[in-house]
Image 1 (cartoon, rainbow, N blue to C red):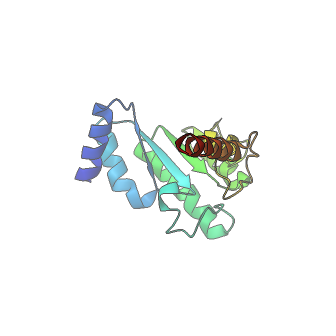
Image 2 (image 1 turned 135 degrees about the horizontal axis):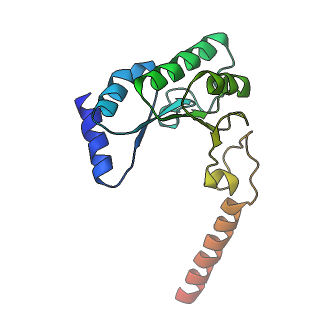
Length: 164
């Protein structure tokens, strides 16, 4: 808990207005300590990007009843602890809707359907900068990865020609 508060204080000292961490009941002691230190806290449930390898990849959460119930409990625990909002990433839309209706703090969806209180769209996802996988919740509006490869290859070719 001490390191969580110390890290949160460092972020605030560097200019952050709040901190966000991934997890629910497992991190509740840290969440409560951060909030008790007067630092605004935002939760993050569902697919956890910092744990994606441990979880075996990007997977939609809430498909099975055990995940559904765990997400509800974690969201309520974060709200009860004093979080000001919770991000729901890749949570099934019906579960995200239920969470949004049950808790008193705003939900921010990332690929969790239209019934969250707010939405986040990760810019590289929209711009097609991650060609090694496709997302179901957003279709890229640009193929920036391919365009960047083309530009870099053209630059490398021009450098090679100028040195010849």
